[in-house]
Image (cartoon, rainbow, N blue to C red):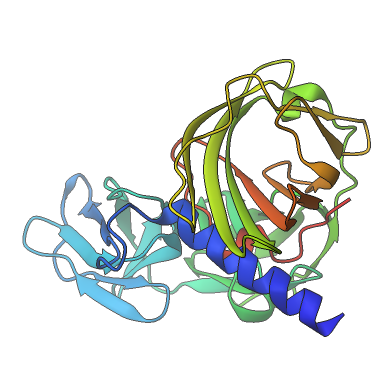
Length: 320
């Protein structure tokens, strides 16, 4: 069992790397930036400190502009501060996904003192979840280690905090906080994996990146990109295995169908044998085994335009 888990972990890593890689293996990973402007009464606010997740800071210039560079794809929180000022929004959760993110702007007002709302979300550790603030001010933060979060820089008022993460439900769904002249702590939530809705053939329609490890007469790997039509017939747009074979199966020679429980069948003249594949509850991943004369372990990712996958996409996800 331990060796199977290790094998799965290795293949997940290969699949995730393949999804974000280009043909130029070994090249330096691309990085991106986050930028924006801070104003007060419509004019530029210089000297405001902008803090990025992890403690990196920038300072607004004479035009109120700031920027962060060299960022990997991922989820970040951007928070402005300056003595004697409150900001709207108080902070913003930002997702970097294959491009620079601009227009992360804030507006400042005068405030003699500010306070914070904090808490933790249990039940969904190791994944990226967002807490959104509404009410007398707005904002959002990405929860940190252990689901801990803080929304700071708030003036007294009435606020609502709402957690969100695809594939999870929360108790309570949101919490109302009346903030006075002291910080409000222990605004906690419990996350529970959502029961997936029934699967349909439409969940398979689209483009998938297929990654395999094979053992037998042809040890090695195989990766391909295939698009399924509404009936599940596959057309491969790319194909390569570790032997150098780049000839894909003929269009329409493999068909996938899915039942309501998320179990996928493979048929057609180029179909493998002993196929068993299932879809994740977030319907973006498929895992399974099979044979084409060699034993196969398969990890398959949905290609969603503009989405870059990370380890969080497979952590704590339910496979049917």
